[in-house]
Image 1: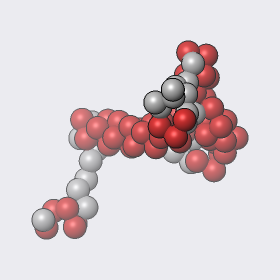
Image 2 (image 1 turned 135 degrees about the vertical axis):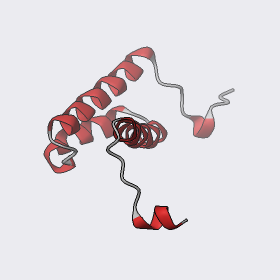
Image 3 (image 1 turned 180 degrees about the vertical axis):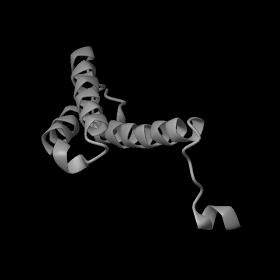
Image 4 (image 1 turned 180 degrees about the horizontal axis):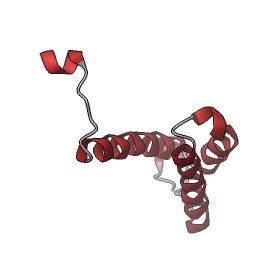
Length: 86
């Protein structure tokens, strides 16, 4: 009996490593191209085809958070006018 959601099996170690490797290559490209995703389309496609959709959503949110944290800790974060009023 398969108890995993929608009958999807958990990724194998090899599949997880492929996903993480594709994510790392895509993130590296973004870092090297000042977050210009248009220059990293092939790597994004590889990332999307190597990882479960739920993981892609998580990793995208994780990257946004890490970039925000990096700016905040460096003192580069500038709250928007909307944020300052609330």
